[in-house]
Image 1 (cartoon, helix red, strand yellow):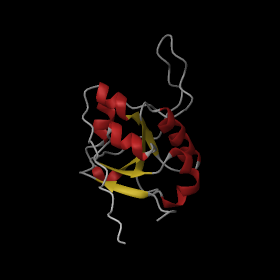
Image 2: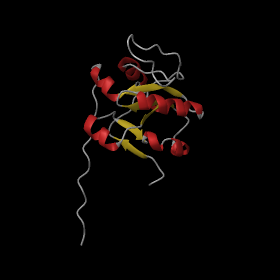
Image 3: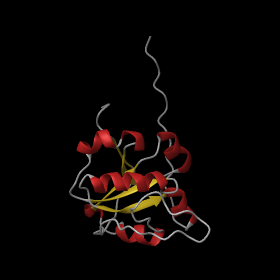
Image 4: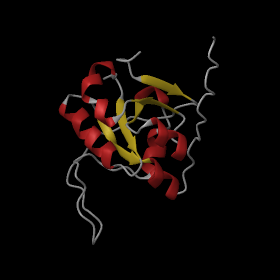
Length: 150
């Protein structure tokens, strides 16, 4: 499975039809503009998208240790940001995509890459931002190591 992105299913996805990414986000006063064009979603926007699981794919671009230490969403496709471009063929094009990282910086860059390659992207979201806005993340426990058979 080294070339196929691992799919984690830990709950039920719920998503609605999403609009394509939009550019021209204004940065909050005193902060630099984001280094991506994709729309950064709020908790409410993301929760609205989660109302219909058949139309959305959540693509988490974080490392496994971040998923374990921070948590994530109930069901998602996991492809690390550094591996995304070489795994585009494995990502479905029949759904709108929301990309996920901790604070949406990597997710935004991933969303831009996907948009450039013909995917429909609803936006990017930060898992920690979602939690800070009152959302609940799923906490993951890594599997126990396998006992060696000597």
